[in-house]
Length: 375
Picture 1 (cartoon, rainbow, N blue to C red):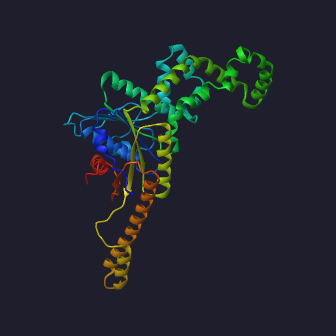
Picture 2: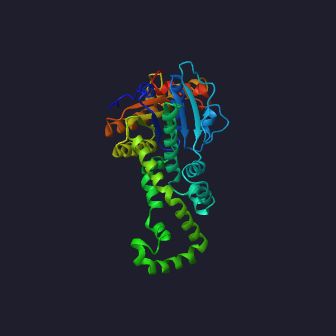
Picture 3: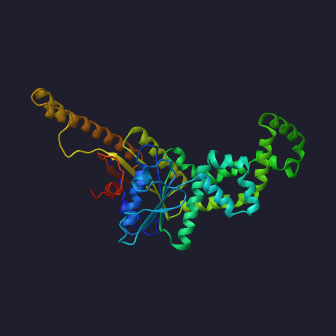
């Protein structure tokens, strides 16, 4: 079954599209696809910022930048004759968290939070924090673009794992962590609904002090007390960004390769986005193999067997390689056919496998042309 065609140019040239989210498993070329989309959109006249949450350095290298940090940096070498521009940045989870604390609390309260050991652990390594900070940064970029017109398109390159969609659960994850019964008990063990539990809690607290140490419990209590006033704002902004992601101004691309495991992961992403009611544009199938020689694998192998390897070694090797390529093409077609049969409404575009790595703007332009089915 043939899939609907994903018209990438129509999407990035549509001025009502404000945010593009690229997600997919690791090793499928998602970062490259994000960068290629960003370059193509910028050279078509969009004012683009591309945000990567993937800590790999490929995006910076391909855009000709030495490094990326938490502040958007202009990308030179992009054709701006159509009025577009391109900035790029990489999420710094802790710095984003710190900036939020500084922006939404008094200097005294911010200092108390930033110096707290529990906060330092939370902002650096707790599960889910990266996804929530990605929501914060996306919200910041969108607010800035709405206020001063810095950008009219934000492209987000998500982490290379199933956790790439954890930002959809960020408001709930944050609520569970910071609004949970455990932390509330630490904060108010003898007040409100917990008053009757105070004796039992004191026993539990005494046991926890022995296991975790008095200082850790004290650090957590101090953090919760200082952070409590900020929590409502965190949750409200996460919910606003979630609404933005599900709006008509946002779209999702799922990136995969024509391999069994990658397509299985792509199916997970497609199904999860569909369940959440997120606006999915379609599937980018990267590194698809093709051949202009219309000779089957069986015919190529038969011809190779008829040759004398001693007299025609190059011809025999070429036929064998062609046969191997044909087998790859056939396997990819079968896998893609199965995907389309199970999810017939998902549009897709194919990006031909390139002979070399994508390392600069010219090769990104090439990928962009392939994404848009120009070649």
